[in-house]
Amino acid sequence: SRGDEFREAVAEVLALDPTWVLPGNGSDELLTLLMRSVTGPDRPLVYPTPTYVLYSTLAEIQGAPAIEVPFDDNFALPVELLLAARGTLTIVANPNSPSGTTTQIERLSILAAGLKGLLVIDEAYVAFADDDALSLVQHHPNVVILRTLSKSHSLAGLRLGFVVAQPEVIEGL
Ligand SMILES: *Cc1c(COP(=O)(O)O)cnc(C)c1O
Figure 1 (tube, helix red, strand yellow):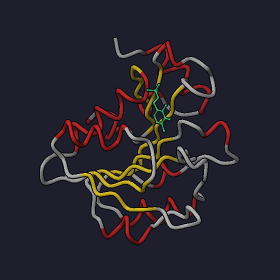
Figure 2 (figure 1 turned 90 degrees about the vertical axis):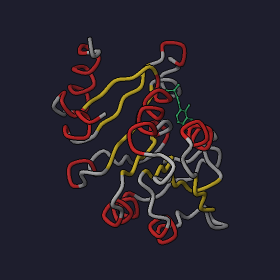
Figure 3 (figure 1 turned 90 degrees about the horizontal axis):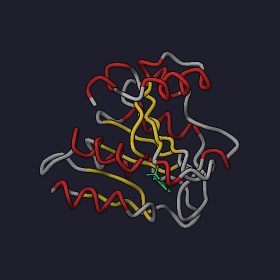
Figure 4 (figure 1 turned 135 degrees about the horizontal axis):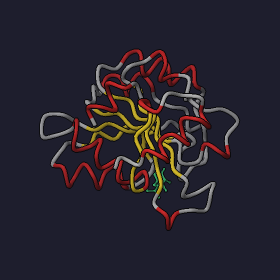
């Protein structure tokens, strides 16, 4: 089974077709899947720092270069530098951990439009923010939204996470 019941429940809550949803054993499993799918020795991972430490760990396991781009002093997202790093996979945690800062959806949209590779927006803490980037998947075939029930729903032990992306991306994963 592909977790069809959970997939359909997510689709209903978010008003999407189930073909846009992929469940996983927590979002860590989905991050692993994304890394294995698109990064490698010549296919770098890019992310702003400081952020969730698992990103660098997964790159190391995968043998992929991890290009770290520092946030500026106000934790503004360094969009130009992230674009210049040309990742096959770029990950932005929004809200970010550990800073708790957020980036406006318009800025994430500019990043998505300029990247050839996938842009993962890790929304583990989105329930504590005013806005989410879900609408970006409609317009950007390279955007992958990552959610988890571990934090805001206190269900870390159940291992329930999911990806929202266009069906071609979901099929590929
Ligand atoms: C906790 C966390 C995750 C992973 O959570 P799971 O329990 O694997 O779903 C992913 N990204 C960020 C930013 C987190 O804080």
